[in-house]
Image 1 (tube, helix red, strand yellow):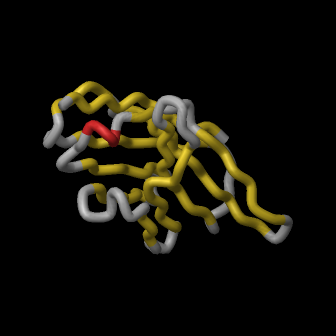
Image 2: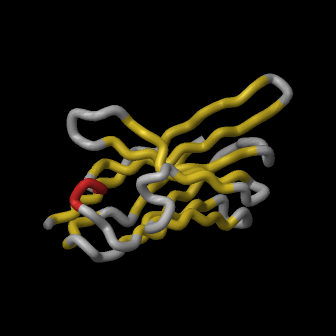
Length: 118
């Protein structure tokens, strides 16, 4: 399984950015896709996640500004980020959880850097 993330960049506070992450390879239809972020010197934390059935979870810090969606036909997850703040600066990673009767496998993408200047 491979996850290819794209869409990061440098923006000013208040701007918007869209991230995307395409999953390829073999994984189960019972799955979820999500985004994590890791700021310098901090732990990697979940930003948002969406199941194949469309159930969504957001971290409280982004739920009014970010929107996660997915295209199951393309195995792609998107993160629309609005009203970006300097504290959103981080490397953003996409993640896939793939569930089977044997358990849950987890896969990470390579990360894409988002820098928000004040």
